Image (cartoon, rainbow, N blue to C red; front, side, top):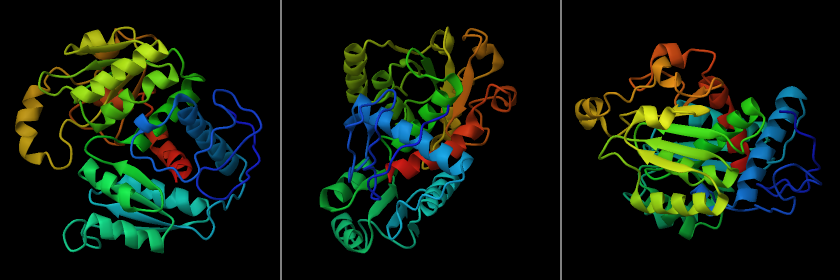
Length: 331
């Protein structure tokens, strides 16, 4: 997708207003907004985040422009949970915009132990301009957001993973040219990544089909909100325990690890419970001819076989790069 250049009126966060662009209202202003969940963002706001991500990617990567929009700004990166891709994409993206990222592990910062989340939020508000936090509990993000005077960006929590989904949809937008009318099928655990899909898909005109084993369904409150959004935007939402039913007629097959960080003790049980949910070429045989595959990690695990993961249908590695561009916009 080729994105037209736009005039940048502000160098701070998301306060970028273009003259005209397809799919989102030019009057949308996201300056200073936190991003804990895409549930809090409207259809036009999400479309603008995607448009701006694509625009930055085109201008910096392909046009070789230098855009120091965050010169003089610093970012505190709190990582309770490690991640190669989130760390590298965040540090690289923030630096490309002229900012200074500061990485903080659990060894450097002790949220709720030596220092409360309230105190941490207040201290960081005086020392930096933005916080990206990758945490275990979503409540930690809510506490930081409540007490901070600067934007808080969710790098992952137990409930949501918004920057992951923005990268997914940017990748699909580039591949298919348009998102509206696509069908995405999730096969696997009813986890934080799925929750973010459910808070976003309908707003982009995307149909969502979900297959999870019994006992691993998404949160009921999130299902209820997704049903409301689907009805509001006229999209289809299907929940089933049958992977082949979910895959039938789809454009995109998506999955995630069956054993997330912190669930290692459950591995044996989870591998047993998820038997039959691995994505294979047989799964794709009931999808549309142009079907593609997405995964949240640039590596292979039990939930997908090599034939799919490393095939030309796999968008895993382009999506991994796109995380950088969506993080740049979110910050």
